[in-house]
Length: 218
Ligand SMILES: C[S@@+](CC[C@H](N)C(=O)[O-])C[C@H]1O[C@@H](n2cnc3c(N)ncnc32)[C@H](O)[C@@H]1O
Image (cartoon, rainbow, N blue to C red):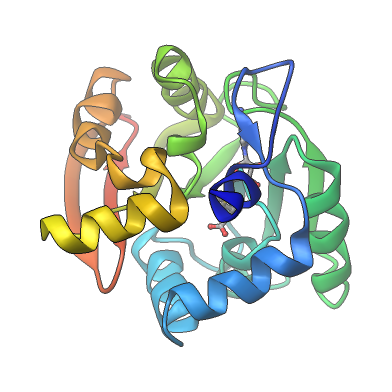
């Protein structure tokens, strides 16, 4: 259960959700957990988001900024990407790792109350964040993603997909805790649809990711 505590960090008073600490250790864990496929999976998520050169992008629950940096690459130096997370530890790590990308910045914030005005972004991405939120605030977070996207803007929401087999699932529970063992990833689709998004598509990326892509109607 120590690993579960490490993965889901400490409680944040603003959200009741679990924030991450220990950015460097999380990075090492991510490399092992994805069995060397973290780079291809996250680059694929950035591509699936539809981020293009010049876009303004937002990464919600950015953690150490791995996906943020992939999206920074996609939007290029004429675009911007802002990573938002409530954990000072991971934000410090994210800033250090993105030092070579001046158009990639980070700020303190929570998914349920995103920084920035309405219609401010072309693309919103979020990976492995929703399962950190208490169920009661997930709809609020999706509504915020909808609010900050411009009409026609694109959302890519990805989260941990527990293994199908009972034994492997049990193992995930023993190692990473019940939150990940039972993560109701099938609820991402209705969460996004009920926030007002349209043109939903979804899929899985080996080994652990389920994603939903959607558009804010014009
Ligand atoms: C498992 S990490 C994923 C980090 C990163 N997106 C990735 O894919 O590696 C989940 C992140 O969500 C953040 N988080 C927790 N509660 C949050 C909230 N209410 N709003 C935004 N982020 C939150 C945690 O601090 C943590 O950095």
